[in-house]
Image (cartoon, rainbow, N blue to C red):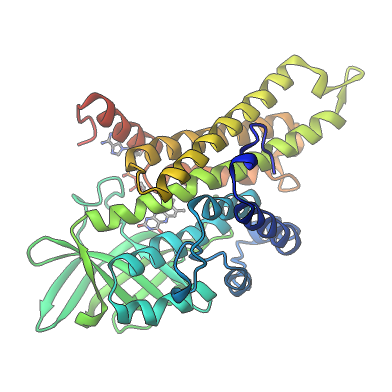
Amino acid sequence: MLDYGDVAALCTSEELHIQRTTREFLVREAAPHIRDWWDSGTWPGHLVPRMGALGLLGPTLPPAYGGSGASAAAYGFVMYELERIDSSLRSFASVQSALCMYPIFTFGSDEQKRRWLPELSAGRAIGCFGLTESDGGSDPVGNMRTHARRDGADFILTGSKMWITNGGIADVAVVWARDDAGVVRGFLIPRGAPGFQTRDIARKMSLRASVTSELALDDVRVPAADELPGAEGMKAPLACLTQARFGIVWGALGALEAVYSEALQFARSRTTFGRPIAARQLVQDKLVRMLGDHTRGLLLAWRLARLKDEGQLRHQQVSLAKRDNVAAALAAARAARDILGAGGITLDHGAIRHALNLESVSTYEGTHDIHTLIVGRDVTGQNALE
Ligand code: FAD
């Protein structure tokens, strides 16, 4: 792993073991095929049970629910390694672990945990998280039209969700809706529930090896037992987003390593005017910028992981790191594409694929600018967001 600041020296042997085994698995099973999957828009679903068997899904959960009680950094390394191959794989695992298993574990009933967590952890079931609606994702409170009407002990859900990762392949959807009093609540909707349909979004030029879907809810009856009892108000989905953003903080660095390594290797072998382009100051400047961003980003990711394990992590710190690490990875992917010259526009190299993927990563889970405003509000005490 690229580790110029020797973060490995700050990690436990268990964390480094998870990093290594995840990399070995992905180098063998995913790296040789990812460009074809991306090119053909194929979701490599066959990897899901393999990821489950390796303990990559919900690893921080206790063993009773299929996890291994792994540390936040161990979870981060899994996200890093998945995104080093492709953001599509990390997006799948982020949603599964942070946006489906986490809310069920944190806000769910014992029965809901017993029913879903072991299946999701083993990769026998897939989850999705439906918060965003077509009117705009940055303001999920103001723009939430999906309604949960009480009917006796049940709820009847009506509305739609947009841009939902894993939507069309999910066995269970965590859906957020407002009740009659306007309170946001979370519901577990199994695939095939009457009135519940999904439609995959086509012609994406980003995250092409990931399924992104629209969810349609037309008078879907949800029994009281499928409401998340501990989730009341926007705090609940926002807590899930903090978990997922933490994974992105690490994942973006995996993509950064991929494009940096590719550009460095190319620069050493590409010769112009009788010397390798790696000998040119302008090229070295680009490579060193990438390395500096990766080094700082990894130190920050590691520190946030320790704060998370200590229960001291603030969501604003995650916003800053998500914003900065994704921006750094996107800038690196564009610079790597540039170093690769004309060949850089093809899928023979990873740079353009990572750059296009990172456009989504920059937008989802709170856009770059929304995170700027969250941190800006934190440090100035002035609210420029709302
Ligand atoms: P908008 O909110 O309409 O924003 C448009 C632009 O306006 C952005 O540049 C934004 O920064 C800017 N803007 C908005 N408000 C302000 C402001 N106050 N000040 C300054 N600028 C502002 N959602 C889910 O719920 N579940 C998922 O699994 C999921 N997966 C996704 C997968 C992909 C591939 C993508 C692309 C999106 C996914 N999303 C998902 C949705 C994602 O979270 C939203 O796209 C994101 O929150 C932004 O919302 P929006 O696209 O509606 O943009």
